[in-house]
Length: 446
Ligand code: PXG
Ligand code: PLP
Image (cartoon, rainbow, N blue to C red):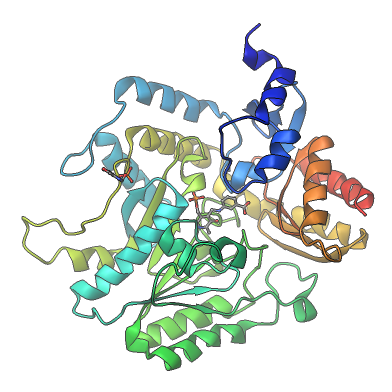
């Protein structure tokens, strides 16, 4: 029997492991690990073979469910055919094929694609594109980037700077100069237990107008927001809010970036949140579901006019001095092509819309559970916000996460908010299991 088959021995050695885990409580985790060794469809399996319902699509990325055959086979075939090919001044056919296929799924008007390897890289790419776009058009004075409080845009310098989660920013110095933030839209007093988009708060978009007055609009290059802010606690945009942001951007020549790393790929019941809300940004950042999480990949989608602005200089010059060794990696392109096939064949990018009413009922049925102070939902996303324990913020959330895992469900928590977003193949019986487990957990968490 090899080491991998002996779970006790894995757990016993973890305390000394050299693995510095990302966004984790390393010491506590290594003392009492929660491991997944295998996955299939809606479920993970622990090394001991315990079946765990995946309530958050891994990290919001496995939208088509786990280990789907067409994706696995595309990757297996891909890796045996072309392991790597350079994408700087060279190319490979899959990259062009994948870009072409992708455009069929994108909101109308999004016609050009830049490949990255993650959401964080997509965000930093989009921010650099925005600055460079203004510069090549003779508006190099537009140097400021605006994010939003409680926003999450990954962990690279640009994304951390425009991000608005205090704990993710405070120990990393001054970050990037010229960044400011508009206010968040979390408003328990007026909007608690809203179903779908909350009624109150469209006027919060006017905070952007305030910043244009403070800095002068001619200094602002771009505004980046998540259409639904997910990592920071799941905040659904108030009715009319995104429209207002778009209007203010238009008025002042500011680019609007929607960070759709989570909201893209069917999460809200349309391919993108852009389609769902009917508000068109200038750039969209994507990752995660683009390959069903199988191989790391990200992308920035942009309007034709953005791309065209770069195609005006001498032809024998590199139009954009930016890119990653692994941009358009052949394995990621193969995984992406397999993923798009599953999404299309199974109608997964609109399935959340069919399930949303059932999902909403199930989520809001937890209203009477102890410590629940808000429930928010949209598409196949739900947030259950718990009152923080006095003097110990996040403790209640963490306990809920651990107890749910013991009861056979994986649920992410962000502080004291439980975040649910299952693969889009979820069945109603599994929705029942998820919220049934959440109810049991909430009753047992003091
Ligand atoms: N933008 C948004 C909107 C995201 O949600 C990123 C950028 C960064 O993507 P990468 O691929 O670099 O991680 C994200 C990622 C959680 C959670 O549980 C959310 C993310 C990642 C990990 C955990 O909320 N979002
Ligand atoms: N650092 C060094 C020294 C490099 O040579 C490179 C790429 O060539 C990078 C960082 C960037 O790596 P990547 O292209 O994988 O983002």
